[in-house]
Length: 326
Ligand code: PBG
Image (cartoon, rainbow, N blue to C red; front, side, top):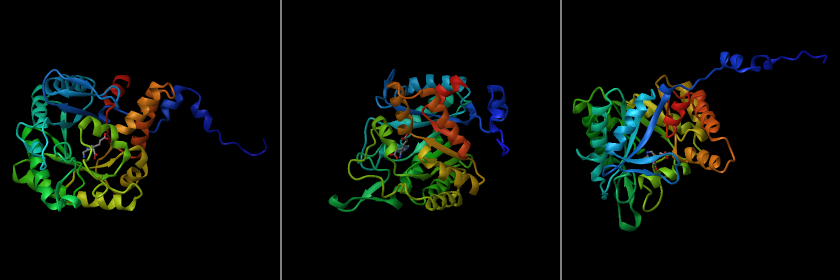
């Protein structure tokens, strides 16, 4: 060899050396466990498209919350699956709604755990859209401004139940501002907003919609969620949410949008979250079940890449299984 070789391999020779120069480490504290809550008691139903994930009744969710806290995971995000749905999503802001009851029970039983609630109407509306509809029967549309009031009142009901962080995922314009004002007006100045700021209209939400029974009855969510092809627009969404009062920003999904996450990290100095969504989880589990990939390693590699791209927090269905291995 006549030319000098730069020897990067010197620091890769064994695990001790690799550990010493490792740039990114996953920590239990980075994780938020996603949970589905259903009505009834003693229910622990497997979600077919998400091996390892269950829909839990409130009593079971409390047991799970204890395990989560014991594993050193600081937070959970709750998704409610109500027994009844209607056009205005009445169940979303009910004092005794499913998420409100689960939040109260968790806060009472495991006070150290941070309860984050997903604020949206789609799990509660009979039509499955994230806001209220208006217009003629053959051309119904999600109506932005009337939806804001429903979302704000949902967030307030979650705060009243004891949620520390509310996370609006509906993608209506102006919802962060509406929620901030409503929280403040009701004495919840200390409740934070984690905005699903750059939330894309993604095919990776499929398994979630099975679990939450929230597939839209007609049409799709492209009229309010972001176009996967857009990068600059994500910065606009995030900037607006910050101006409206978001404390933290989220990019969702995660793996197909790491460029967005990296942009956000360079641009904003607030805490950033990324949502490793149901389809991202399901793909790894499905391939691992067939023996096509090493599921544990693929999961860890995915999550570390999300942190490397700039996320401070990762919302994932794999938080518990990962924390058990860390
Ligand atoms: C509610 C909501 C969705 C997800 C989180 N909050 C579904 C959707 O927008 O269709 C998806 C989460 C996942 O796929 O894991 N709007």
